[in-house]
View 1: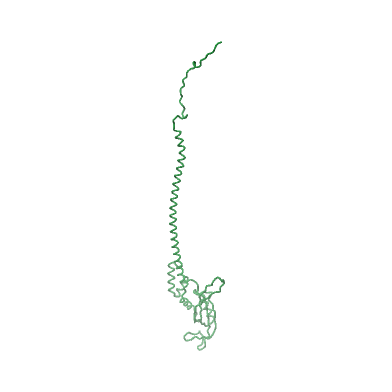
View 2: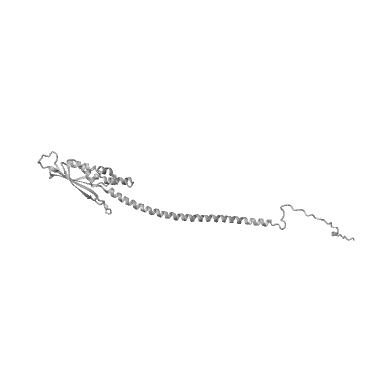
Length: 258
């Protein structure tokens, strides 16, 4: 038999392989640091964004704190000014109350000279006034917890030639702006011989000389008006109350009263 002796190493052909260049985008060459740099950059970008946001936020917080401090200072200044204004307002209210009290004094004044002059001009020719007195009327209390206010009034006593003259006199007094018309009333009227001296005080027309005069004694009562004097300037001026009228006109010019 034959033996088969094959030497594969001897018969093998030696082949030389050439290295082919790698395509672009392939593997990473040893020693290339670009991936590390890119990774670090990718990691640092969020940190930089967070740091920037924190810096901006911190700046805004500082600005707001500064603005808050400025507003607190302005608030303190305004509170001081408000306290000063409050003090001034208190002084104004005090002065205003004093002015009102001062005006009230003048408004409550009704000179007797004006009232007497008004009654004199309204007295009929056949009516004589013998006396005039001041009265105070206090109405009955309807509420036990409320004290009623008293009203100042007048009582006129005199004589007249007839009842008609007395009635006319009362009607004329009701038209007086210085009296309360609804309170004018005849409280007494009685006929009796007069004790007047005809030489000095006259006598009723038509009465024979030597015959006794039968006159009518009367009493008329009325309350004085409660209208402020500032609203009666024209009437007071007609009655010759110059002093009070001048003061009221001065207060009106200054705007204290209307």
